[in-house]
Structure formats: structure tokens, C-alpha cells
Amino acid sequence: MPKDTKPAAPIVVDPDPAWQAQGIALASELRSLLAPLALHVEHIGSTAIPGMAAKPMFDLQVSVLDLRQAEDAFDQPLADRGFQRSRYQHDHVPAGRDDDPQRWAKRLWSRRGGHSQEADVNLHVRLLGSPNERLALLFRDWFRAHPEAVPAYAAFKRVLADNVREIGSYADVKDPVVDLVITVAESWAGEAGWTPHAATGPGSERN
Image (cartoon, rainbow, N blue to C red; front, side, top):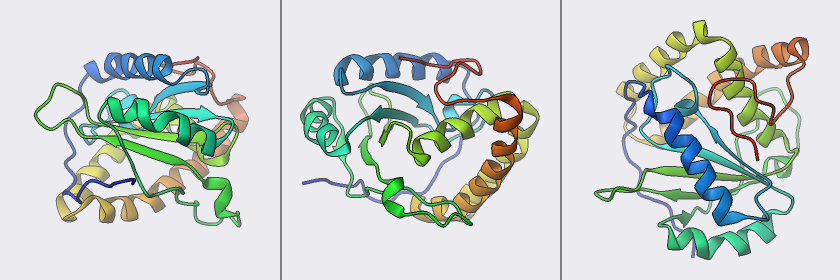
């Protein structure tokens, strides 16, 4: 049965330059573990953005062609590495998008290292070419291309983390701000000719 970790208060810490190399190493490890269904494995989220304050856990995205096939194939090897599958199977649909929630489907596994040496990881498995797969990469790459925006977003996250008591509330408040960032990022993507899975910044990982 999929399990979720107990809600915890969000903690946002100073950026660590080592996060980039750690993210690349984790992506490489998971790519080997989940091949051949894992078409891309990439370091995403705040720890993938140089200079960004973040929760001390890594977000990785795996791109696949079939979520149910991936769920069946990934469950045991990930469990052997300390991951538990979450019951949550959909991402937040950005405000203003009249979109079928099924297009934002995913599978999510999490690992919490505790006292072990293993890094805390959220592993998001999404369909190749889906809007949520694209959004995760666009969010990362826009910030990598606009380092002047990093301090303001990092400050927002620190204030938010100091004023909520559990991670669910943190995500609920943060989602609309991410929606605003993506609105700006979409214009940049068109102007810059950005495409998913292209090497657009430091630490880019491609399969």
C-alpha cells in the first residue's frame, strides 16, 4: 500500500553549492536503476537552481511513456532504496488553465533519510510531453536564466516557511506564486526558443 510521511513543518535553508553535483549524481543513480522506462531523469526544484534557498531535499523528475507501467516497474526497486509511493497522483493545475486534471497525472515516491546517509528525495514520475513535466523544467530553467529573480523568490519562501506549520499549507500558499512565475516564464520560453530537456543552465542533466 502506498504510504505518505507524516506532515512536518517546512524548513528552508541557505543554498548549498554542493546541491548541483548531488542532484546530478542522484539523477544518474536513478537513471541506471529505472532504465529503460525512464526516458529522462532530471534534477528539478529549488535545489536545482543556483543560489536558491530551499527545503533540504532533492526533487527529481522521471519522464516516462506510461504511468501505470512505470508504477508497476518502479515500485520494488525504489522500495529497495528506501522510497515509499504516495497516494497523490495529480499535480496542481495552474490558475487560469481550463485543463483536464488527468493531463496533470503523475506518480510520486519519497525518501526521507532520517539518521541515514541517504539524501531526502521527492521523485516525480510524469508523462513525457505532459504539461506538468514541462512546467517543472520551465520553472527551473527560467530561474537559472534569471538569477536576479532568485533572491526575491527565496525571501518569499523563507517568510512562508516561518508562518505555516506543515508542508501541505506551505505548498498550497506557494502554488499561486509558482503560477505567476510560470506566466512570465512562458513569455520568455517563446522569445528564447526554450524547449524541455535542452541544456539551458548549470547542472542541466539530459539522458
